[in-house]
Image (cartoon, rainbow, N blue to C red; front, side, top):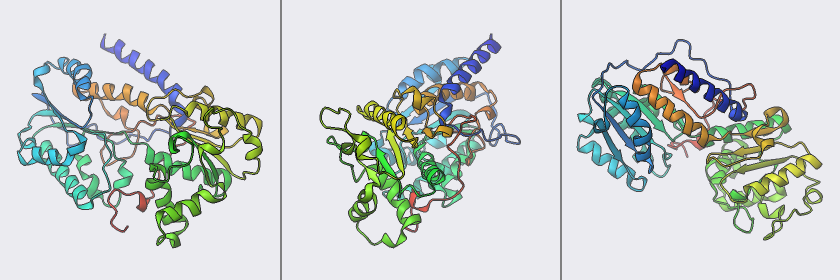
Length: 407
């Protein structure tokens, strides 16, 4: 029965992958990889689950308990610690000072930190990462098997290998963050398609980057975390001394470089406006959207009409929250300039329980190794496929670093 179950899983994974392939990159090879880092030995007595996930109890009941039953452990073997994000570092340090982690021996450990590390305080983050390294090293010495679910892109900690050293002690790491890779590839593909930078293109932004009336939000994460810092580092360093507001309006708004929702939809009816005539003089049109807006599907429709009637311009869609997208986007590919992230929520919803199960029962985890990382086995919700476009870049983007040593 076990073999039948595994086959059914494989078939389901293949079907799911075929639906979500448009966002993927070719699978990174695992030949020569260790099955587990610093091989620990069971049997394990308990499972410790430390998380900032508000829905962690559902994970415990639906995933952890059934998997543990297969190895002879019951619900009473689970030690669950939820750490609210609002007071995360304060509460985490309290656990550490009270020697919570030093008591964990001969156990499974699942450490989940879905929220991304903030940039607000270098010393706080550096100290936190150093403590994680000490904790994970100690857990390995105490014969623990470790899985990490981490919501910070490793490339954003690339200024020093010390910042990701804690992951080298883990048996498997699931990195859930995709925005960094998505943005890195967005910039690269616009350059590839048009021969100009993404800062010279005419980018029609979806409604999630705009206020209710459709004007661009200057302090959206798209600009504050990615585009403006990248622009100052790689495109126009001479603008470093300018105020953020001046940089935004002078280099991002003028000349239709980044175009708000209001310019191509009539508010409040959102009827189809005379967009083709209005934008007939756009030299390098690009569509860029995130699905976390009630008006997202309306953005899709106007992008489709513009592509059908006028241009074969590139479309970039980031779907982290499991929204329904049109088939022409879901089934598109880089060959017809459709750059879709895939349904990240659906990929994680399927793979995290599967990986957790195999982590607990002792299956080979190398099958999930699809992304470079400090951990020997790193999984990222970017599936393999011939149409893959989200490539891994070893280049360090200094302005996107969590710990900004030079900025």
